Image (cartoon, rainbow, N blue to C red; front, top):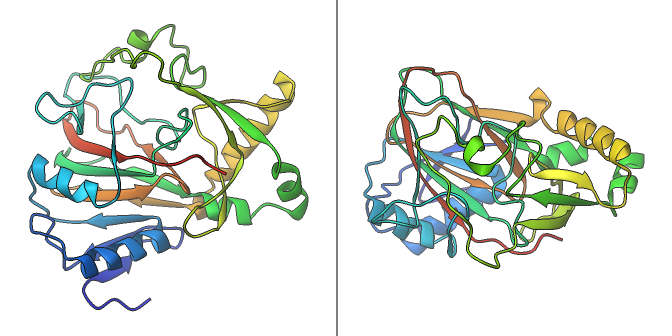
Length: 285
């Protein structure tokens, strides 16, 4: 792909590319954003280095990608409710996103994209891994592809049993600076989705599964557990994964429709603070 306004450098064979020649603090011209978006669809996650932006500028840039989604379980910033501050202090023991997942999979219309901007980073560690679900699907045998074609998953937000042995939402966030909130009354946080998802823009197929997935619809518990564990192990093979090392001023924007991600918790006693915005998505098919 040829770009006239930006420079794009892949960082791994699986997915991910750094984008150069853009200052996100300045207005982004339509032609420039068009190239960023094309690079994003091609590489699934794009990264920007050395950015200095305000919350207002981040929100403005996020709106170019779609409507902003408000997290149902975690409070946004007081002045900027669109932004979720993902903060881990030197004393915190909980790491937000420390499981393989795709954002908001428990929703009937999961998040399209996630934008994460680094405000403070540890001196080492704190990387994020991304797994390419296109490649995971393509690597399946014809028999598995045929079997998985009609399977649906049941996905849960609150009371998720796969996170660990948490007895409550408050127990889940124990040791975290970010505190939970009750979701809006009537908001649905349990949903069924196809195990094989078709991307609405690229039309490519990918596996759609993560920590929110509790069981496979219509399967016995033992069958479901066996298949889910097998699929999750398959999805995170090294050849499907890229890894991004954060520095202050780095930004990542990833496509939740075809990626899983994992926040690595390997920086005890250090501080990490990120500003996250998620973009509204549509119903998977």
